[in-house]
Length: 343
Image (cartoon, rainbow, N blue to C red):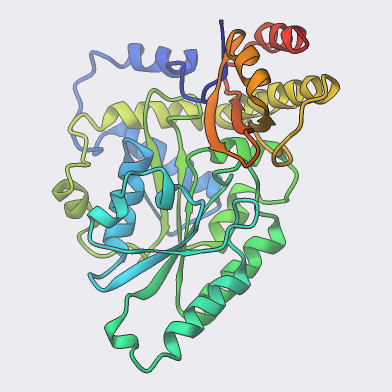
């Protein structure tokens, strides 16, 4: 059986594991106040081209979204997201559990449109009863999106411009950011992204780390006492150096981007094979997630060959499924899957 369920099925990149083993018996201070975490934060800020960045290392994506958004929002404020956005669909109400409403706007191939954000804010601002309503304060997007699509440079600039003009914060979920950067189709580099948003995170869990996400924010965006808020939410790792060592390794010798490019190469190879075999893409493939629309017979046949992700049911008995590649996907597994597609 071949496995293409997700991009976090494997453990960690060998270089990351090696550094964890090499540093295993070191005695360091806790909570991220160690030499490895400090070096990781320095390298990440440098890669982002930011001199004034705050960098915080957390454990997982849902935890990171809940902690950052919970810290940025006051009790009567909410976050704007696409109706297909991860925080709106696949986080089991984690944001709502912090006491904040997710205000959804239409999804455009997984993306939020600047015009929809402006219209939502203007509707709120122009409502005589707005003091009785949830105030939109943060705009949430992910790069890549839940559908594996990418914001172009113009789209991100448009969102950034609207947010700044309306006094909103722009926050980017970067759980799969490495794969978005490696796709190299949008002109959105790490420094460009850092310059257009107020805060974002660099995902490690899905891109070569055992676990870990690196929150990057411009100085002054996160509230005073953010460290204490992380602690209060149960998100502060005592052995913080375990995150620091991993991100130090990922941001040494361009490892993060190099392994991300491998995932993109494997996805493109698989996409070519799927196209040649006559499969229908539900949405054009841009990154490491490939979404297909298949009938019941094809679904049953593919299930005998490989594991993959269920996404949604479509009218007429078809199902959208997802094949995902990762930093660890083997070329021989991709080729074997392609060879089996017509059987």
